Image (cartoon, rainbow, N blue to C red; front, side, top):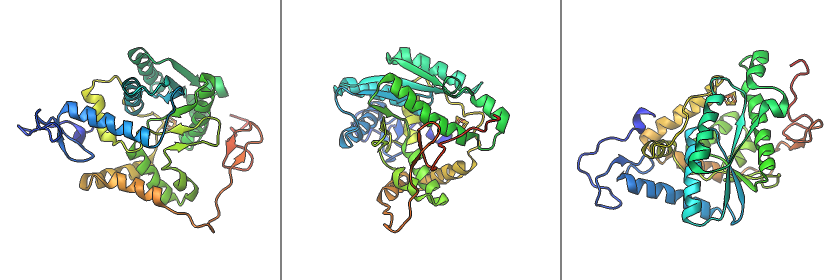
Length: 312
Ligand code: SF4
């Protein structure tokens, strides 16, 4: 847990919502002094409203929650199960995990997901790179080193989630991307001049033209609040970073956003709003989406979606 996310003792100040209980924390998103019970209530209610306003789910749908064992997906699994029960969404929920084959990281985090399966009573499906592609990330990193490993891994994961979702016969995949992640991605796409990604990275539902759409119920949920919620609720999650994570560029964007948030908490929502409101000139040439000649999967290249060297 980050130092500034830790709940602080707040003297005898009363909760600004119920005006009865002692405030237990300052909400990172609004800086309001609030008690624990009211924090749980507003945190869950905001997510419920996002789900309703954006029509993320329909009654009777089968939904896979992309589960890594980390704080975001663990809180997502917990909150979606609660809201599904409380508001009768009528959803069949599943946990879907991808095993990249990273010793000392994913093997441990998958143990957390297996415990979540029992704790929340949600069926779990694990798909592995080894089974799908014949390679683990450990083997790939041994071959190619630590340069571009995340490019391989990212493409593999995207496909693996689609394959797992198809096996589970779900209608949609819900992921734990939070407001901080999305603000970071907006900034990164601006810094890279990636207009195509910039125009779709703030969408709350993506891939509607593909086989299985994805949605982000935490699009407006602050990372610090997710950490607080998991902490106070004593949820069982795994907090170690991937051992192959270089992420230097994203790390700068993350730190920049954290600095802005310290000065003005709304900065995260404002960056997302800026991303949503970007209009791309009709004269801008956009990259065309292709199909891989080998596997038939969607690709940003004209031919190969992603091809491992034959020697690998
Ligand atoms: Fe894969 Fe890179 Fe993420 Fe590790 S940090 S899980 S290698 S994408």
